[in-house]
Image (cartoon, rainbow, N blue to C red):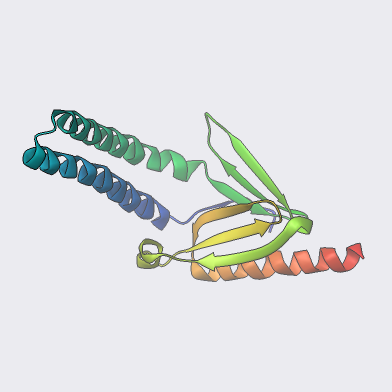
Length: 159
């Protein structure tokens, strides 16, 4: 499995739903500021609420416009000696996780991922943890088994 793999197309829907929730959270803080201003007449809260509304709108526009970009440039590769995660075109990032350092591979899915029938693959080493945002359950299970199999083989050959 040395070829680079894209995430499934459903991940775009997950990212869009996440952007909507982030926007609603920021707007909710703004609404709370307006309500508190109404009852206690704190003028500065009206400015803070306006700031949160503006931030919510800007964040929503930026996140929604970046969904196709994120999808196009997010790849993962599993080789015999490492898992590579690539992202970005303007700000490129390549993370190489040596198989010998892998301690755990966890599959998880929150409600948004479950609604799209996807799972998150989290690869844990001694120092950090990396994730593949969302893959289909059968692909996630296959990745988990392959990574752990390679990690056990490396440990057995290392001794």
